[in-house]
Image (cartoon, rainbow, N blue to C red; front, side, top):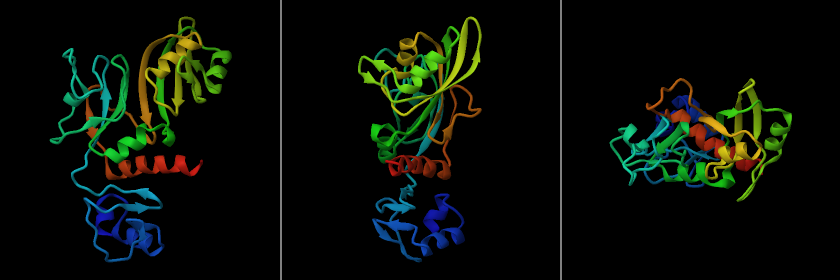
Length: 238
């Protein structure tokens, strides 16, 4: 209960109630009050969702600016997302945003969470604000909502909302469940609305909020747990 309380699951009293209710498992078996755990080796779950306890695991949300590459190093000498955080340990970006795309990207040294957030089977939603050419009408929105035929196959249905529209362009919020290369840009081009600006605003329950471009913040234990829970909830709906 001490380890879970430190991880932000709840107060010690609240965690004790979770344990008593059988909602906590250690290495696949029900936990009991007073059981000791090795935070670096034991797998602890609450309601089926893993709770990372290892103090050496770090998690950062970065607002990636345009012109920065989503890799650890770049042979062309361009700035990288790694250079914008200073975790003191080796981290890597979870997925990629192309060099012209801005917004939310996660950096961590948690391999399990990285796999869950990038593997297609977990279907973690990602939302973007997109400035596109031309006023977007109902036909284009319906095409995006049904799925768009691209050269690497039809996309999954997207959730689309027009935020603003005018004679020269539109601002659209789109949420997708995949992570193909330049997917949003290709989807918009396919429906006749090339992208002028693209900003990722959320990864599952993690919101970019008012984080300034080029800055990063460390995630709270509650936010990390919520990211894990988001991958579990998608699978539960299968």
